[in-house]
Length: 347
Image 1 (cartoon, rainbow, N blue to C red):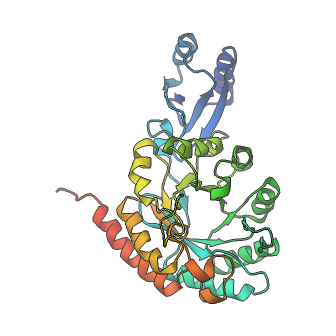
Image 2 (tube, rainbow, N blue to C red):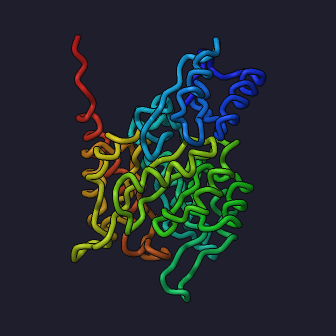
Image 3 (cartoon, one colour):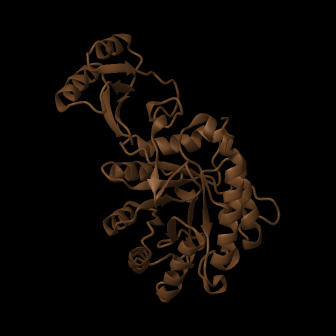
């Protein structure tokens, strides 16, 4: 990973560095961070002669060799200073909250608009709304592209940036063309490397944020972080890791709550962690407690399903969405725990 002395290389400098690395069978991937642009060497970066030639250039500060399966997402990488901001919040500086319906009902858009305004009033920073839904049963409601129009109208009404899950490249294009601010990769696609690559390419020149959920059957934590690397490797490092429960589930919960992996992730990667308590437990009554536990474990934010009338919702909303009033109370309590986590300043 090449770190220049200035914020970024000039076109002439980049051409010179590129010529060097390509002569050793590698290539350069530019990663535009919040403070400076860094240049990842993609390929075998261990050749000492290549490193020496690059470090000998007057405009290069240093070349860092990171022996990690995820060179960009590793907390030791030069991206460790990268910050993700959305909805007026820089993750890590205050509690970040995504909230909204599991599924948008295209036949009843007013319910979604009402929910959108209510979750904003409750303190949410990003509005979630399911446009397309992965379903185990092929006869269940799979979503409707009309819901994308409803989602964007809710954005116009509330000013909240919006989050939508995409499951294939066609949906990805529709979502980006519509102006979706956050792309969600669901648990079923967390290891779909072709889709992760496609998302990485699609958001490379954008400020779009990607919320990557943990697969239900994902193994080691490095596998989760490496999935994020697939996206970041194309140039946009704004990827958020989202634990959402794994298998096997204990009796009573939808999944095995996994918010406790948050400090383990933070030991390995600089990426923000936003926990989804709704899918972890799968029952509205348990969501607030799971949300508070996530913040206590060090989560940077929460992704919570909320609906003004859960019983009239679609998808998972009737069983796991909390009301905006419950959301407001959960956010208030979570902020108190967040404050307790802050280090005490010594005069």
